Length: 327
Ligand code: PMV
Image (tube, rainbow, N blue to C red; front, side, top):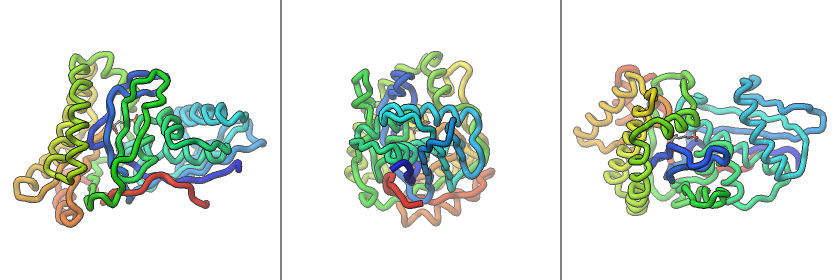
C-alpha cells in the first residue's frame, strides 16, 4: 500500500513534560502522564507518489507554511529511511479544533501522521517502534497513539528505545470530562521546542523541576488507579503550576497566559470552594483545561463560559487511541 489515512485525538498531560534530555532524538527530560480526549480530532492521509519531486503538505485545506513543511518533511525522511524509499508524499491533514494554540495539535497531528505514513510506506512496526517514531515528530505524540490514560516514559537509553508511551487504563476506566476554555483562537507565540531549550539553558529552577517529576508521576499513577479525583486534581494543578513556574523563570521569561487564563483559574477555584470538584491544567498556550466528573460538566461549563475573556468551551471525554481509517 502506498496510501493510508489515520485519525488521532489530542491528549492533555495531567503530569507535564517540559524539557529534553536530547534534542536530536527528541528525548524527554521527564516522564509524563496524559489523558487522550474524544471530542477533538486530527485526520491525516499520506500518499507516497512517484510523480512528486517534493513533499506536498496541506493543512486544513491550505498549503502548510514553510516551517511546518520542513518539520513534516524531516519526519517523512525518517519513514523513508526506515522503508527504503525515496518517494515524496502528498500529506493532507485537518483538525476540527484550533491549531498551535496549546491544544496539543502537535500530539494528535504527529500520532496520525506516524500511523498513516508508516502504513503508507508498508512498514510493519511494533507499537513501541511506532511510539519512538511519533516521538521524533513531537514529544507528546506517542501518548496520542493510545486511548485513555497513558504514561510516557523518560527512558534511560541513549538510543531512545525506552522513551516510549505505554497505556495505563482504557478510556472506560473513569467517567470524567475535560472542559477546554478557549481564551484566544490565535496560534501561540513561542513553540514548545524553543521554549524547552531556553528553559533548560537559562532557568535557575530547572533541576528542581526535573527532580520533582518522578515522585509526582508515582503519586499521580496511584491516584488515577484508585479514581481519587481530589488527589489527581491536586497533583495535576501542582504539575501545571510548577511547569509554568520553570517557564516563567527562564531568561527571558516565557509567559503563555493571558488575562482570561487567570480569570478561568480563579473561576475553577471559586467553583471548588462552592463544592463543585474541578481542577485546571494549562499547556504551552493560554487555554485552560478543567477536569471534573462527567455528571458535573454541564454546570461547570456554564460557570467557566461566564469567566471574563473566555470565548467558548469545548467539552471532551476520555477518548480512543490513533487508528487507521478509510478516506
Ligand atoms: O509535544 P510538545 O513537544 O509540543 O510538548 C508539549 C509539552 C506540554 O504540552 C506543555 C506538556 C505536555 O506534557 O503535554
